Image: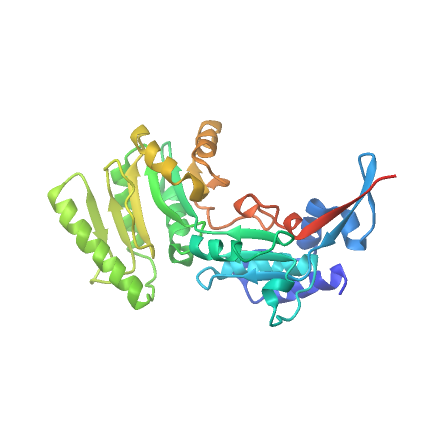
Length: 321
């Protein structure tokens, strides 16, 4: 199947999933050309310095995905189809794969890393943590953006913010989050998630009762639709995700805690989008930086965990004359 036929197939399939964003032939062709060059469509040689190059897709490509992040799974499959149409899975699927793309926990990544061969291209997407920093004055727009970021996919994806560091009026930011979340739609949770949220709430009810500096807000009628915690302590608490918004005052004393997360950090949402905030996000280890409210909306050709989205799925042949 030629590139344009694969492009049309992706566009047709993407209509079923509008949350993938704008997927048109023009968008996909521009993406392929931008990352792989015009020669990829014709499998031709292209001048590259004093030599020539040709890009050859890895084939077959094995995608191992997580059921909790359908967005990431579909994006991965889309990339694979654009460079080469996927083949039917065979019984020796792992041994035959030229490239292996894995989404999952660090344990899952470690398991497949121990099984791939040196000649196979291995692209791991393991456990990741994202968060947001509000380092200047904020308005209702930033509150709404924070809710969008923290509600999409029930915080189960790698781009979901797990906490918000707020420099100005952090306690009021948390209060405004709770007030606006009161109008959000209910969510359905599996039993294990519901149990985790109830345990989190019970723990923090006790802790905030003994430390008035912190505060807990809960959705009405004993529902589990959302939870907001304002925690001024110099630690970053674990929490059960699923619309659990943890707000902390931004202080330099938190930097050692963030440094412990560095190897797992994916996206940092920032407000305002100014050079000082961007430099800080880079220092913290961000792989992707974006405005608050856009954390769950990466560009189609974003570098997921620092990998070229299409370039990782091809090998380069150099021709020297």
